[in-house]
Amino acid sequence: MKLTRIETTDGIKTGEYVDGTVITDDDRYEPTEYELLSPCEPSACFCVGRNFGEKVDQMEYDVPEEPDFFIKPPIAVHAPETPIQRPDFTSELTYAGELAAVIDRECSHVPKSDINTVVRGYTILNDLDALDQPRRTARKAFDGSAPLGPWIETDIDPVGIEMQTTINGEQRQSDNTDRMFFKPAEIISFLSERFTFRSGDVISFGSPANPGLLEPGDEIEITYEGIGTLRNTVQ
Image 1 (cartoon, one colour):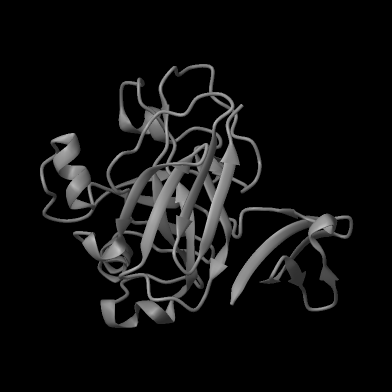
Image 2 (image 1 turned 135 degrees about the vertical axis):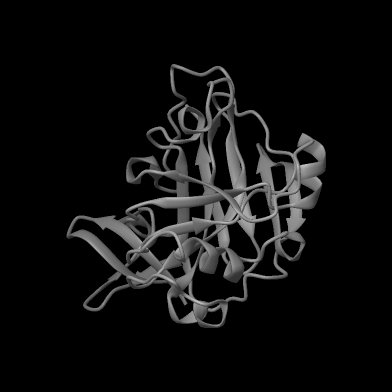
């Protein structure tokens, strides 16, 4: 099932996305009758880095002994299909296509064996990075730095799925989540020992190799097999 949030003339609605139609509890909306919103409203986005072998080799990072993470604030979340506003303070805006989990209920200290009981499903996050800024928070935690969507897929095994990122139709990233150092369940459990998750919180699991620069006019599409495609243009 694909769960989505949409903006309609009746207000913000949640429902199931089926071949373009969104079915809510009391109505149905065709593609011309809504705009996609981010599929959840997290209190935080917990993002993991250095989690794919080829990227670690490419960037000459050390292999982490435990998940390496940072946090993006709620204001970072940006809707699918909505243009990305390039910040004035950077000349090096980069993309990174990441698989992300959405938490279903408040929880903490969750063992790996129970992760499925607290995860609503999986979506896609674009970890935008102002690469020329001096520190990680300045680089990654700005307004609109986490395009998220297009919906939450509730029925998928996050391990062993293919992904690709294209810029203007040209493939830039391609990998499989089986090649993560730390798999989603392990990461969620690890972070839950440090944070109390709230319903709607997002955990992303790192980017494959070849994150790269975005220029005005670019269209970026991040696809994860079995979930869908997160699409935005850059202004």
